[in-house]
Length: 588
Image 1 (cartoon, helix red, strand yellow):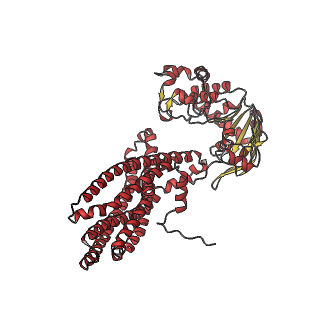
Image 2 (image 1 turned 135 degrees about the horizontal axis):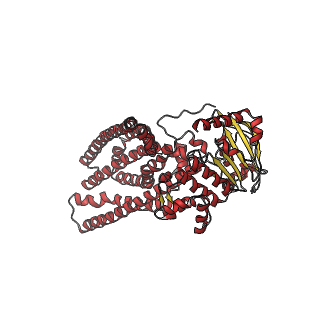
Image 3 (image 1 turned 60 degrees about the horizontal axis):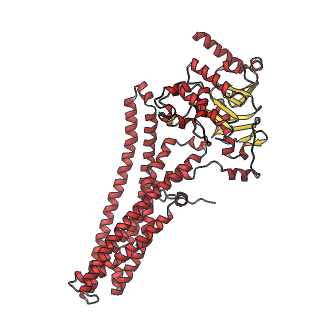
């Protein structure tokens, strides 16, 4: 079946409306604002007939009274309308941001392999602000505007049907303007917000690594790179300015043409006695408002196309593949919830690829509960991928990852990941107080005594006591105000408090000096004795007392056994040990 070709300016309507259904719009507030907008339009319909007699020279008491009542009512309703509309728009933006951020936290990790997180954050911060505000305003105003147009046209039809014709004659031109400029708006706005994301991502990455820029004295180069990204955004904004200018010019020409037609018809009918002066004044006032409403409808369409462009990335984020919910996992497994206890871990003929790049190939092994297993291999051999599959950051392409007799795919993420403590080589922490770092992700109440005991066991208590406010001392983003060893000790204390059955360690001492690394290693083995431990390491001296070692090469398991068994039976392991020993001798 031949797929329908989509025009480059048409936009993704299906994704756009799906986004509307997901961003949790404040419908009650919108409904209230809609009612107020309708009342406003009803009052506005009274303007021409209320003031026509006054403008034609009448000073009757009833005409004066009606005019005073009208203008007071108009002022009150306009004030209420602006307050409610502003509040409703802000509520909508807040809800949309919350929903989009929630979606981003549940996106599968493989999506981020091809999308920069820093760039995507601008979908939450920049893209939604103006677009959701405009969208809600349009939703509130559209039907009342159509109601106003219908009622106004019916009123002037009572004067003479030719007056309605004079108002409708320019509509084909308005339609052409709406479609052509609308598609142009979509393309320019999509380009602008894409470039905002690129610039945001670039700046976020560079600010985070300013020390690297200074180290290599690349300030001038980075300035040029920033100028290039800024220039791209400038060009996109200039395109939008050009569209706006042309649109404004076209709209002005059509408006002038419409006014000429309206005046021509009105004067002819007035001269022929088909309408009187009062009806002519009322019609002229109606025609000005009707003309402005038609312009508004055209502008709303153009704004809608702009909004499509603005939220294109938000639509992409909301439709990105997400991790299964607990209910989906159970349904997919076709079984009741499981609760795997601390049990052995097994890979059964597991294969996995990052796109076309093979990362693991038919890997099988078993790790007994309560044992310590080392994972070694050259860079890019698939070591970290194995831990990612255990956590289900990625799903195995073939084979099974088992926890006891349970396939991890049948477990909910909260159940599965609650069984792991994962200490990565960069010892990731968020900004906050020391106490907030230690309790991050722990869903039970942790006493001060527990915090102190965990910090002491991890060797973090000594430096925590030197901080100005102890446990309440603030820590900079990414833990930049701490040394690598201090961050690592805080992470170990946090994972000890978490009390998971299985400890996953990915090069936990790679960024530390030798003495600090040795102290952290001793801390790990003393703190987590009796737990199941998997440690990726390049430090071969750590492997002597491990229960077993897995040796990886190019995504394949080429050796499994104890230190002594692998020295005699695995050439790659023997070569890695010899290489490190030679390095130590050379350094010594």
